[in-house]
Each structure stands twice: as structure tokens, then as C-alpha cells.
Image (cartoon, rainbow, N blue to C red; front, side, top):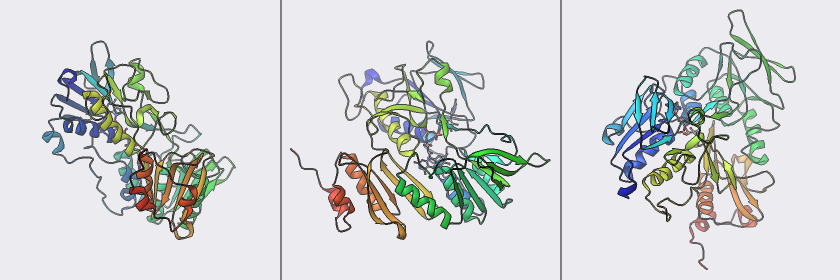
Length: 427
Ligand SMILES: Cc1cc2nc3c(=O)[nH]c(=O)nc-3n(C[C@H](O)[C@H](O)[C@H](O)COP(=O)(O)OP(=O)(O)OC[C@H]3O[C@@H](n4cnc5c(N)ncnc54)[C@H](O)[C@@H]3O)c2cc1C
């Protein structure tokens, strides 16, 4: 580590996936200065992905999975504060104000504030029984309510909506999903995989209504939701509604402090904001994404943890790829993602785009297949269903900047695993 650039006090706002990994990586990189980690939620930091999957499907008293064991904070000498919300940043004084009235000085500040659920504005949205799913508190409420309801309506056939739908079906409930687009998970998946999941959910017993958005909710005299009315005028009885219509990045602190914000806190390849002493990462950050060829924001565990590792090295001016200014090379880790929907494990490596050529490997009828995506003959992404070996091979290939031919991808006798482990020929 370069002692000249070693900050004295790092303050991290947000103790989710990105914030925790950042703290861990700072210590692993040898940083010995002070670390303060702020989390506004009351809970010990926990993993979000299970909340829409095993946690909800479990019959009795599910336990959240911690991001790190309790002793992590003492072992790593981290001043970790729960129920502590940062309310403003003074960039001139280099301080952060907290909701308890105290102020913290920083030499480097990291914003890992995540995202918030997008809310509906249709009539009836304020009725009770209409929920979002983002936090452990949300999941605890939903888990308890699922014992007491019969009919569930999910608004939005994105990842969280469909994971919730599968979990609610596993608990024997009647589930209807309303999606205004013509296919589920349409922004992220190719039509092949998206179509497979549309059929698979109907096989699970989910009523999937495509091309139908939400127009309004009906309620009873007690102010509780009783039905969802779709944009086609259909009325679906509902004791409970789950709204899964996407998220917005938590940029309020950054914007109020005058940092550049545009669909996320704008950062460079070092995850640094328009203020060189402030970094942003994870769901809240808009970064130059070499895999998309554009500035994007990604919402995934991979993105949060890999950006945190990269930012830790950038903060310390250390690590592989250090440039002449002491900064590492730009963040370029391969995006990958997973979603479990009932017995179906979807894994995605890379980023596809509309118009990519798609090649099928395996058999959707057996619920085991992968879709290989190519642009101008080069592999861009692979979507796998219950094919973890394909997913790992795809990650190896895409991370190394390698490709295969569409013919190889389609050939069931082509040994993808061995090929992906070969060293590329050096020129
Ligand atoms: C239900 C659910 C299921 C998911 N499933 C998957 C999955 O299967 N696969 C996958 O790859 N990804 C999944 N994700 C996405 C993944 O969890 C997120 O991308 C990841 O958690 C992002 O990490 P983060 O640290 O950027 O944000 P978060 O983990 O959201 O953490 C941000 C934290 O900052 C806190 N905070 C915000 N502002 C302040 C403030 N001013 N002061 C103090 N604290 C503040 C927030 O309360 C929050 O706790 C899922 C997400 C959800 C909600």
C-alpha cells in the first residue's frame, strides 16, 4: 500500500452488499486507518437475495443470512453503526451529518446507498395489503402475511416479482402476475429464455397475464386491498399485492451535496464521483460499463462486490493494474447474475442486447438449457437454466475476452468446459 495516499478515516454510507465488501477489502488490502460504516436499517447486515426466495418459501421462522458474522466488525476494528442514517454531506468541511445530530469527519467517503423500490401511483395504492420487497423488514411482514391470505397478485414480472410468485405458489397460494409488457423479464432476457419462463410459471400454477398493467386497486371498508384492476379492465381478487416494478437509485445524499447524478451517482472507472474524495458503488452508481459500451447502473450482488473490491484498491492507490497516477485500471469485471424461481435456477453471464443472434444449447423441454448470444459473431452473453457448468464456462470465456463459434455453441458434442479452460493462443 502507498502510505502517501493512505486515507486516515474512511466513512462508508450503506452497510449492504457493497458497503460491507468495501470494508472487508480495505482491511484485506492492508488499510489500518479508521473505518466507520453507517446503516440506516436496524438489522445486522444481511443478504437480500434469499428474501424473495427461500426466506419466503420457508414455512416457519426463517432466519436471514448475514453478510458477515457478528464478530467481523470487532475483528476488523470497524465502527459499525446500525440505525444510523447519513442526512447530509459537507464537502468543504469533509464531514457527514447523521440523523442523531452528530457529525463525522472523513478523508474518503464511500456512498453505497443502494436503491429504493419504485412505487405505483395508481388509485388505491395507499390501501393496506400492498407491499414492496426490498428489506428484511419487508420480508418479515410478507412472510407473516402469507400465512393469512389466499389470493396474491404480483405487479410486474421482473426477477423479484417472479421469485416472489414462485415462493407464494410453493406455499400453496393462488398467484396472478400482471405484466404490462408482452414477455416476462423482458429488459434483461432474450425472447427464448423469457418465453421459457412464461411457460414454466404457468406450469407452476401461476396465472401470468402479459400485456396487462395495473390500473387501480379496490379495497374494503377497512381500507384493505380486495382486488387489482388491470389496464384491460379485468378484476383480480387479491388479499395481498406485491409490487415489483423496479427500483430507483438512492442518490438523494449525493444530489444534495452537488455531486453529478444521472440515473445513479456518476462515477469514473475508479468508482470515483465528481468529487475525488467521494466514491460510489453498487446499485446507486452509474459507471462506464465496458461490457455494455455505455454508462449503466447494474443491480446485482456481483456488481456490488466486485466494484467494492475495485474501489478499495482505488482508495488506497494500490493493487493490480495501478496506473501512473496510482489509480487502478478502470473497473471492467464481467457482469453476472442469478435468479432462483422455484426449481429453476437462471444464471446470466455477460450482457446481451436486442438484436443479438441467439443459439440454443440443451433442451428447454427438460428444463436444462443455455442460450448463447452473439453480436457480429462474438459471444456477448449466455443465459443458462439449470446448467451451472455452462454458466461457469461462459464466465471463463467472457472474462478472458474469448469467444466460440455459434456452431460450437449449438453442438452438444462440443466440450465447452474443456474449451473454456484452455489458454487462448498468444500471438
Ligand atoms: C429481494 C431481492 C432479491 C435479490 N435477488 C438477487 C439475486 O438473486 N441475484 C443478484 O445478483 N442480486 C439480487 N438482488 C440485488 C442485490 O441484492 C443488490 O444488487 C445488492 O444488494 C446491491 O448492494 P448495495 O450495497 O449496492 O445496496 P444494498 O444492498 O441495497 O445496501 C444499501 C444499504 O444502504 C442503506 N442506506 C441508504 N441510504 C443510507 C443513508 N443515507 N444512511 C445510512 N444507510 C443508508 C440502505 O438502507 C441499505 O441497507 C436482490 C435484491 C432484492 C431486494
